[in-house]
Image (cartoon, rainbow, N blue to C red; front, top):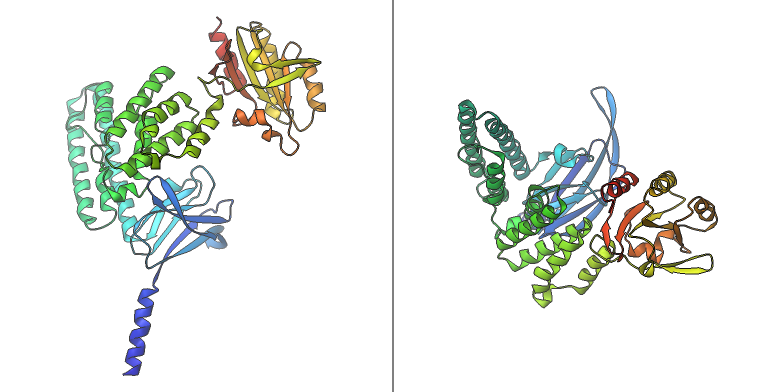
Length: 460
């Protein structure tokens, strides 16, 4: 009797302490040696654990190949949902997966995680991957037939379109049935794309229908979708990729219209807050000051007081101090014994402000080319700002730049911590800013050739 009781006690304890594993294999391994596990909640990541990558060499088809392996343990109390294994600080450096009380294993190429991930364990993830592959294969045919019909207006293309549409509906129904009762069922239902029952006659009608029905199958009230990257990814595609124009003014209008459409679909306060925060952050990263200002005034500032964060707002606006539409942050410098200040400078119809460094090979190459070009635009006053550790080399270099205003910024510990440099939130050097006569930033060319294009096309 005691043996049976002891065995029962051990069995019960093992159930309570049961753990699940998440295992990943990189082939080939990434440069780093760490992986962080997060659970996705809304538009944020909740830290769970971190681990190191173990490297192993194996023989595959007679060739030696290095693999990177990592593993996490999740307790029995771990909640089902979307999780993320991150192995880089930025960019496409993560694998998203679903956890629903089962072990998860996957193999992937860390350079192309989305395209290469293969789940070797986990019924949920295998089924969702299988669904996406089957659905996208048919959808690709439908898109091709839609394009063909616009070009040819062919009855055969129309007939083939309707046939593939029926095939797509069958695929959708099959996987919705297969996933009944599973976590991924919500994602399979929401991943369905809108397709018209008949192909459109022209591209404009097709784009309009796609735009109007983009969220046709997305349930914005779903907790499963909220606690994943799904909703944010769809919103990102809709705002920044579907609604696009090469005309900058039209593009700004389209972004605002698409954001307005998205916000109308949201009824949940927690989702509203998450989406607003995400869009403001994304627009800040894109240096889109005017739309960020609009987002704060139209949406963020109207949130309940407890959902607003003064530090968040200041952080974003500080990043945008030097963007198109803003007055260029002021600074002063000396030329010989004379003091100059950007805000009071009055010797040009326009101004070109360029941040550069003698320690930057691109700068050393581009600045002389820029100087030669700007001699053909004497109406533009050039202010060059050297970001330097010390002045000697810079002093020698600027002797070859007569006629320019040459300012220098240093810092005792790190030259990019110079106060003026920090105000401009530079993404690299050289960095260019075109100012009007009132010192408003009116353009931010990426490269020296873009500066040339700008002034050659704006001669007034």
